[in-house]
Image (tube, rainbow over all chains, first blue to last red; front, side):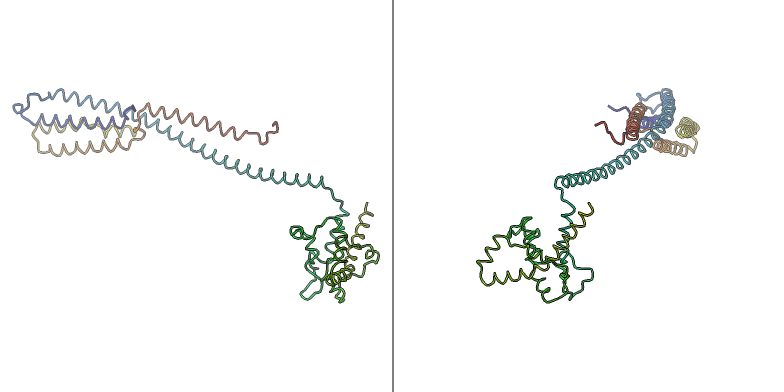
Length: 264
Length: 92
């Protein structure tokens, strides 16, 4: 059970003082003959009043001490609140740092994984440059910087290049491997060949006849071409027409390979 | 100073004596004196309501101080721990 607070004690003492005073005034104002038989003596009531006054004085001293203690309590509470704020700020900062660090670690791990993958599957720069030339020589991956509407140079990939790409692989209509990519690279550009034959400015002047003669269609294609209808033979004619453009690619690739080997 | 003021507000004996004297003399100002005493009692109650820290007993207050000091110690220790924490623990 909680102890009675000083406030309650003081209020109780004030109440007592009021009651005792009233009792004394009643006794004093009533003539002795009319007083009740069990009425308390005035002297005793006065003593009780003095006693209550003493108690009030004592409790006031305690109240003064408690006021001092309360000051200490308030100061301590302020300090504790300040510490709480500091701790909260510090925790917030630490959490922020943790988030930044975990992001950095995640990115670093990704980079390490990429490095590991690159180390496992090393590709020579020569080959990479060759391929870059191959896909960019005919403006298949990006239009030339000076391209404007009406320019005959293609700012888009051909049907064949599309089939060589990821989407073509997904559809699975043409099985492609590295060998085929090299060997078939010369017959997949019907649109560009049309333009080339019409003399629309495709940069093919650097082609060499040797790279044309080196091309051989893959066995399955050869089979389909030889056994196919007139449409197939037309396709073959088209393919032959396109060799010219890919010769250019071949030339550039060989050019870059020779340059990179000369660097070594 | 505040203690003195509170003591003045909470002293009733003088006023009670005044009322008793008036009753003995059968004076006309008895009612006035009694009203004064009543006002003094009300002022005393108001004064008690405003006193700081007396809503608890002294024992409770001292206990509260102990609790707050313990909290202070724990929180200060935690802050020190955070501030002197190794930025990177490379031992693990």
